[in-house]
Picture 1 (tube, rainbow, N blue to C red):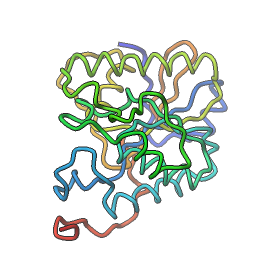
Picture 2 (cartoon, rainbow, N blue to C red):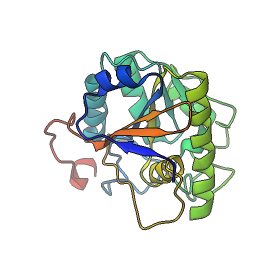
Picture 3 (tube, one colour):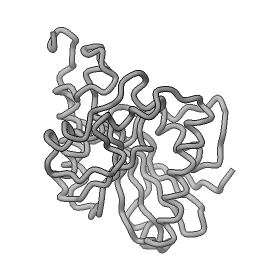
Length: 236
């Protein structure tokens, strides 16, 4: 297992200055979706009204943190979360198809390029956002394949920590693939451990150029103020 330093309630900014350079990575699960609460049968569903509020609260909580860019998958709930947060922080978004949830969109192809560009005209989408749908190429995935895919993402951020050791980056993640990403960061494979993230929960990592990792917070949800509960009947 890679060295991991878990700090609870640390003076984060002061500690960062003390220990030197390192890529600050904020992993943020998407806001609550209609599918999360059973209000839509679509796997690639919209955010619920509460999910939009959660994303807004997250963006407001991150004001002043100098986040330089936001990475997101092409899953609609992640795109909407990135849209809200980037609008508040005025940080550009970069889209990686491989950040998607496990199984991508199951039996759904994902939204096509024209639909994405019409809904999110402020974003520039990669070539993987095809007219047939960004997830049309694959509709199933084993646990091993998810770990392998997230291993590629982890390696990209390890490389980024060497190239940009002072960068501050936010990443919109998903539940299962986010769990797999953390396992790859920590050098874990199959285990009985599951790293849970609530909607818009934030995990703060510091990735050092030598590939060691400091963990400052896991699934921090303190920025989420009291919210009205979403119910299925609100959307029927």
